Image (spheres, each protein chain N blue to C red):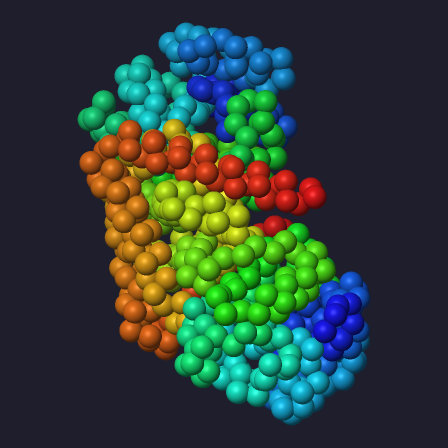
Length: 297
Length: 297
């Protein structure tokens, strides 16, 4: 397929898949959009909204018609979806990609189905989202200025990797390449662990005898810090299970740093507290500057 | 002193003290405002801005002239300030109060100076702040709709407690009474621990070999979660040292909850993860509703 043009199939039409279809229609990267899934209502809604042109409940038909097939089913389901799709792919089948938050589990799933990484399967992860979900919340601007991580592997068809890269660039995203392992470690540390910490903190407070006082007197810093504890429990359960090893490593690394701070508090070691807080503030301030520059572009 | 009217002395004129003076001038709760401190420049600036009417570097004079004296020096310094002031107080001296983030350390400091809690010393803590500091950042609206925690103790003069309560109410704040111990536990759990967690997380990431990738790919959730790691290292070192026991208890309670989640991840126990995340989400959503209602008032 030579972009622009061709048919994009979205398997699992929700916030991410719907937003991708909208963005690619706007950029002209694809000119025909087909939704696929198990149940008609959200797909019908997608047609109503003009996000997709048509839909099918038949996965075989969807694979046959696709130039690019994007698996947008939830993290744990994505492995099953791949297991169904991969055996249908030939040398000339569609390029298949995904949007899941964990890459190692899908990489392992693909290997277990086909024995080696299919050349035209290119795993990817757009770092973008919204508190809202579903195709009604989709937006063609969702990915603008956001990172999309591609995790190409040896054996991938370079043209397939290039196609997925150009697809994401045309949504206004910045594409970053990373190994599968590095992706999962980075996401564990910067996203999966923070969610776990926020859930653990709010759960600890809610279980406390002074719980009412706690929440009554909590201030703005607490609101920001715990915002991610309002995230979807099913999605985050699935991510925690799928990224088990990297998440355990991130928890333990964090635990070691927290343990050092705990010792410093216990021993009244103000120098260690000050040095650690200052290092962290410097890193956080630099990160905030990067984000601010990114938004200006 | 029968409010409205009388002289307010602010010891340590910064964001909080300046904002209090502005709010009490606007409400008419006091009609004369005197700053006191070790160094003239910020006090001169306070006069220039109209936050205070005059200033003195002489603590004895400040205590003599005050109807209400508010200790607004930083957390660790506040104990020294109290140690200087308390011996000067007679039955008819000013009502003394403070704004520090930890109450137990000041309560102990007062007891060690005077042997028993001075009747007219009423410890208090406004739960309000700003990223900015200094008298230039002060605002008469800083406390509107915010909580102020009063920690009266047996032996306190009820009229003194009432005066401090009315003072804070006149700024638009909602006053909540709590024991010293409960205050320190609540603040440890909802404020001091989250700061420690954010500092520990950012420090762990910054120390990682993949640190650049980490910060480059971190998303909005990470930005909110780590915002408080940009807080002033000196202030938070002092708070961590001053609230040692309550903070250690909060760290350990949190650590136990995090340990349960870690075990669930390790064992692939999705039910425990789902149940915990759901409990936490429910509590967080309720907290967000409380905050939203508060803002509407």
